[in-house]
Image (cartoon, rainbow, N blue to C red; front, side, top):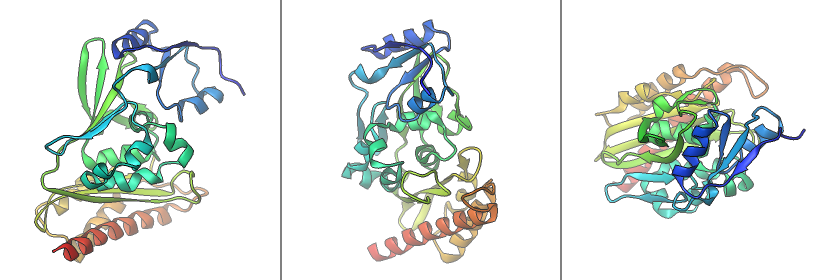
Length: 291
């Protein structure tokens, strides 16, 4: 199947791109990595009048760690950019763990972090990671920029809160409240397959006490599952076997899995519980060795 006919523009500034989106009144799509959009075009799940290709805009392919530990990821930062950066691995271990698990090596060379979050796939790795880390999206439209917390940005399966004339220009992960640790685990039948279940965990530690905690899930519901409320039970406490077991059970209860060809709902919920226990126990063991 071939895509429907569409126009094509390659603006040189974000302002030009926003103006093009505004002029087409919701009938234009932004092209960044294209790893989600192009298949949708070919299957005619999307049939925009215009593609606005932002790859010619200078200054959007970046990622950096600010002096205070804040992470900033530009709209054209590719998955592989994060996968290969030791500074990111040190500052945000959850991102470092998730990066090599995104799709497959071909997708990671072109797909973008911000584009993946905008796509809001219920099985998307980055939306779950951003949720666990309490990040936000910077959107730019005709009236300037605005910050959108990730919990308000991803509102459903393949749905976000961007206006038709806005572009997500940056993803921001706030500075940690201590030493940031974390991990990401994903069960898939083969490389590049959709996840049977994924778990993102991010903790900020002050000594051996949890100062902040975030957990999010992918693949076990019709949306990215925000389990931060369950994770908050760890705040102010030490990681112990008892606390880990309690939080793992609470997070598994938040999951909304369905039975399908990848497994039963009970099986997927058990995977979530096991992954949370495995990640938190691993973080506990690592911190004890470091001490």
